[in-house]
Image 1 (tube, rainbow, N blue to C red):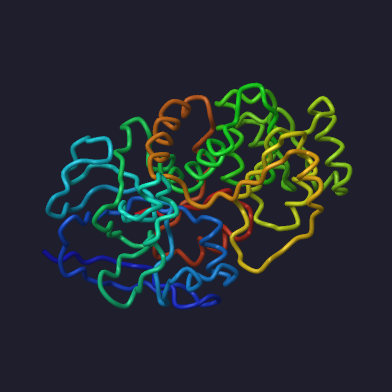
Image 2 (cartoon, rainbow, N blue to C red):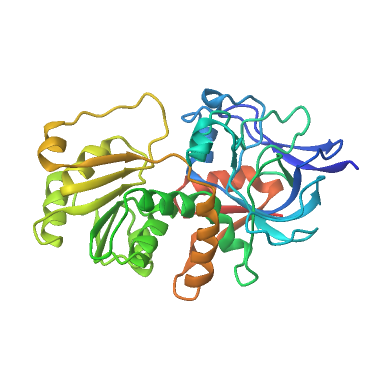
Length: 369
């Protein structure tokens, strides 16, 4: 059976998206066709749109279809697919989320429990938009999951607007805080109060952090960070000296410095400052910098004498997404999660949506279908 739908074709940075109608000739064994309900505009999508994050560097090709932070329903199941990763039954119309990257489950990294470092890893946004299967990114009516993809059923209580952010932003910061084994009673600094930063604040508090300090330069985002659980905020537009900000963190943590700092700004300039905010045995979670070739200087003796550790966090173990669904179902009544994706646009207005998301006026704009 063939499936026909629209895609927003991305030809090159600096060029507007073009809406094409394409047809997937057939569904292969083990594949799952998703009817996309919503796809958010993530920071990495904006980087690709600008050209600062080259998908070609990851083996991608142009033209392609961007978009990866999505939610949808099962449209069709290939032979052999009947349940999700928790063995819940799947059928047409079941709402699901899924990691936007796909592992082989057989290589040495997958077998060692490092599926996000699969030696044969593939992901959304890297396939070609001008040849089958066409539906290779979230900005389209459909998205094709390859054989072996991991997917989870969305709880009935969690709407699409909240579920869409789980498979990238939420799962990423959950995995990062799991990697550093954040403990109850510890102090956390979150550099950046965009979507990832807001999720990081909420997850840190849910893990029992004694104090969470959010840093950003946009007052509205800092106000939202407080609603997500931040105990203190630092506005860099008012405290423009990194030395003063470091002193503030020291003061707010009883003179010890932070136990964990999470970087989700995406600027190398933030890293040295964040490292200086760490106390003894502090752990630095580096998530935001994905643009290859950008560097910063730092004094390694501060790591040695401070017994500090830096964790680079790319993607996440697929099982984290299941825990992310549980987190959303448990906390949606107490967190203003709907505020994260307040702006919605139809696919035909994707160019306007990217312009709005790029203006920093919205935390996460979303394409809805």
